[in-house]
Amino acid sequence: MTQGVSSSIRPRRAFSGLAVAALTVLVLFWPRSAVAETIRISGTGGAIGTMRILGEAFRKTDPGVRVVLFPGLDSNGSIKAVQAGRLDIGLCGRPLNEEELALGVRELKYARTPFVFGVNRTVKITGLTLGGVVEIFAGKRDWEKGKRIRLVLRPREESDIALLKGMSPAMNTTVDIALGRKGMIVAMTDQDAADAIEEIPGAFGATTLSLVLSEKRAVRVLSLNGVVPGVRSMADRSYPYTKTFFMVTRKNPLPAVRRFVEFVRSPAGAAILAKNGQDPLRHERFHP
Image 1: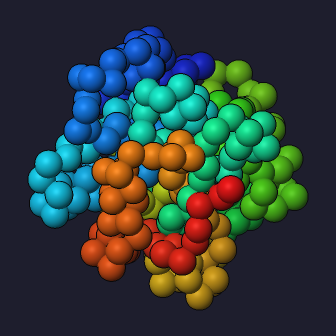
Image 2: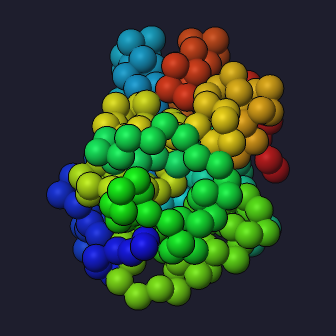
Image 3: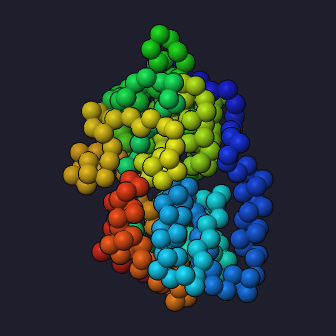
């Protein structure tokens, strides 16, 4: 039966909750003068790897500007840091709510990526049906020959939980069942979840294709209902499960920030996004 071994997990390559808190303090209180020609970015883990690649490519076109990525801040933390003026761009895996939009920030929907299920490389299967995923979350299924499934969950308030519950009425029910079981593996960040899937034999969990590709993760991405997740299958809607990424800025960002945003939306930026499992949304506009 599906079960975990601990109430939370923070593998060696990921930031612990304490490190995330310290990093938040660093971002929020690092003086602007220390980063005069620097674009400071952080946010949802699924977008960080590709944004780092975009930053390296942008630097070649605009060598007077550095792009610095701070790992460890989630969507909520990055929004707050942008509002405080201590990040230039926040990466968010959900749209801003009305309260956040009223605090002097704006959002740009810039890409979407398949929301996928991945397994540890010791697991030999290559695909599941959604019904099989429901059985895993309900604790009613093992791998072949009775090998235990190690389900990797996220905290209840994370956007990935909402995506999982929205996949079907049965998923809405069984995700709650899984979250309520004692002793489950709960990964605190996107990178923690990927670490757990990579490192724990029999592990199974949700992630994004963008994270797996941009960070070159040793995770086997599964087909779902016979469809292989990818940019093409997402675009033709044969693979319907997606996560959308937003860039959040102040309403009047610095010129260097505007140039970087335009680079992300350029043909060169679109090519980088597509190579890393994302559909570039080049014609979207800032809101509000």
